[in-house]
Image 1 (cartoon, helix red, strand yellow):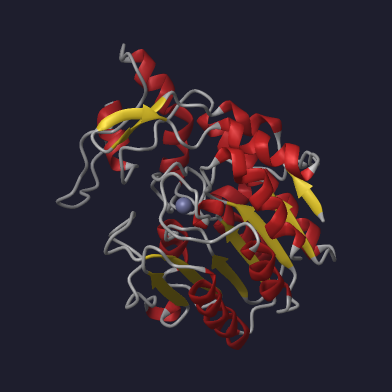
Image 2 (tube, rainbow, N blue to C red):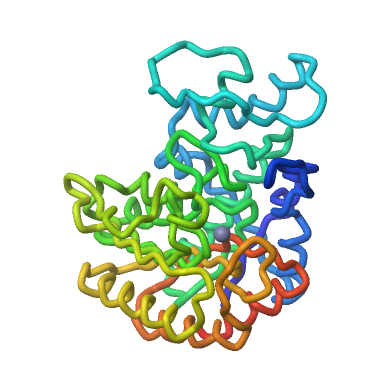
Length: 334
Ligand SMILES: [Zn+2]
C-alpha cells in the first residue's frame, strides 16, 4: 500500500496544553509520526497539490488566521504559546477583529490547541499527504495511507480545536468530489467524534459522514456526536452518529462499524475516506475503549470487504510506544 508523509508535518511542536486544569505535555507530539514511520518502513513525500483543495473546505479568514496567529502573538510581546482564553459564546457578530486574543477565541473552540510559527506549514503538509493518498486511489490503487499529523477531524470550516487545524479527511473527500466522484463517504473510527468533518458536510447530500466514538455525554468534544444528529437540509440523513460507552470492546465496536458500513453502502458511495484513530486502543492515555492490537486487522478487513477505493488518513492515538504497531496492524487488514 502506498503511504505518504511530508517532513514539514513535524514542525508543529507545541510545548504544552491545558489539560485537567493544568499545563501538561502536548499529547499530539511529532514523535507520533516518527513512531508510525519507523513501523511502516517510511513513506513517499507527497507532491504539492496547492492550497485550492484546502480553501475548498475552509474559510479564507480562518486560513489567514492560521498563517498569522503565532506572528501576531509574538508581535504583541507575549511569552508562552498562542492559546485562546475568551470565546464569543453569546453569538458571532460580524466584527472586524484584529487583536490576537479576539482572533484566537473567534477561530478556536477549545484551549487545547496552541498555534506556533510552524502550525500552518505542518497542517498544509498534512493536507498534502491526504491529497496524495486520494490521488493514488483515484488513480486505481485499492487503498492508500496518509500519515496525517497534525490530525484533522476536529477542525471545522472556520475553527481549530482538538489538536486539529486543517481537516484532512474533509480535504480528501472534497478533492474526490471535485475529481468527479459523485458520492463520497467518510468513516470516522477515532475514539473521539469528528465534529469538524460533521460540521463541514452537515448540509451536504453528496458526502456521507459516519462516526463511531465515545459517547459525548461523557467524552470530548461533548457538544457534537449525539445519536440524534443526522444532518440538515440536503444533508438530512447523510450524517450517522454511533456513540459507544467507555469500556467498549471489539464485539460492540465491530457491530457498530458494520452498521456504519451498511449505511455507507446504501448511500451509494463510490470512494471512502477513513479517519483512523488508534486512540481506541486499550492502553491509550487519554481514551477509554478496550480494543487490542489484534482487533485492528479485523476492523480493516471489514472495511476492505466493501470493495471501495479507500484513502486512509491518520487521526489520533497517543500511546506512542504502541502507535506504530497498532497502525501497522490496521493497515495489514487491507
Ligand atoms: Zn481522538
